[in-house]
Image (cartoon, rainbow, N blue to C red; front, side, top):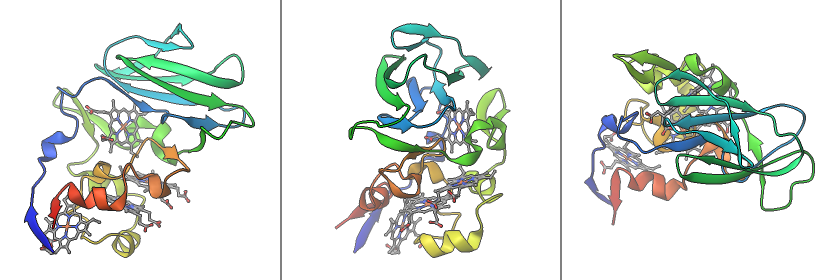
Length: 186
Ligand code: HEC
Ligand code: HEC
Ligand code: HEC
Ligand code: HEC
């Protein structure tokens, strides 16, 4: 039975105090083919790939993006804001890497994001209304325990910038852990 309900502050989203982070590509993702790998970062620091500086574009202060084009295929290292991760480009990644699964709109930042009151936020007042431009309420209802307004902070569970095929539905965490963000299970 679900006893306690801890309400989450919606202010968690896009809090200015959040530490810098690499938001894409996902750690240990494998990118096949000739396409570029999308980097998305939160923070003002410099980006390095394989130890060398990479230029980024900044659509807003503290928001950085880049199209990574490694010179050779294989494993690569990214360093940003004190965080380090590895990804793979080309054919035949070893088992450590899992195929990248893009979330199709994620290259067009303005599909979801807008600068509001000087901050990097979302196009609409609720995130659910951003996502439901493309995802129907019916599909949502079939897959979720709650009505959309209760789960309006989709990013509690989903990674909108893409994930790997190691997880279904771009999930960030296992179902049980997802529920525990609001319910203390007993
Ligand atoms: C499909 C919708 C969507 C698209 C497209 C998208 N994002 Fe996001 N983004 C989100 C959501 C949802 C969050 C919420 C935070 C999270 O994942 O924890 C977020 C968070 C962020 C953050 C962290 C903000 C903060 O203050 O914590 C940054 C930076 C960011 N996105 C940059 C980008 C950039 C740059 C692009 C384009 C290359 C982009 N996003 C495309 C949905 C999107
Ligand atoms: C509490 C965690 C949680 C939140 C919050 C959440 N989801 Fe999900 N979502 C899930 C889980 C778990 C699945 C996988 C269900 C399955 O396949 O069994 C899923 C599946 C999906 C799918 C895939 C549906 C399909 O056809 O397979 C979409 C699309 C989706 N969610 C959109 C959203 C949107 C949009 C929001 C915000 C309005 C949201 N989710 C909020 C947990 C969550
Ligand atoms: C511009 C349209 C668009 C927007 C806006 C959008 N998505 Fe998507 N989304 C897609 C498309 C296209 C797919 C790919 C469906 C597929 O893989 O077959 C997808 C796939 C997904 C999936 C995986 C579904 C599955 O079958 O596993 C999830 C989860 C998801 N989106 C969540 C979100 C969330 C959360 C938001 C808001 C932050 C969002 N989407 C916003 C177009 C969009
Ligand atoms: C974003 C916060 C949030 C998340 C995540 C969440 N819930 Fe809830 N849950 C609520 C709220 C708010 C209510 C009360 C309102 C309602 O019933 O919609 C509730 C009510 C419930 C209830 C009705 C029983 C009760 O105690 O009132 C069940 C069962 C439940 N949730 C199951 C789940 C499961 C299973 C998951 C994970 C898949 C989950 N919830 C994830 C917020 C959440």
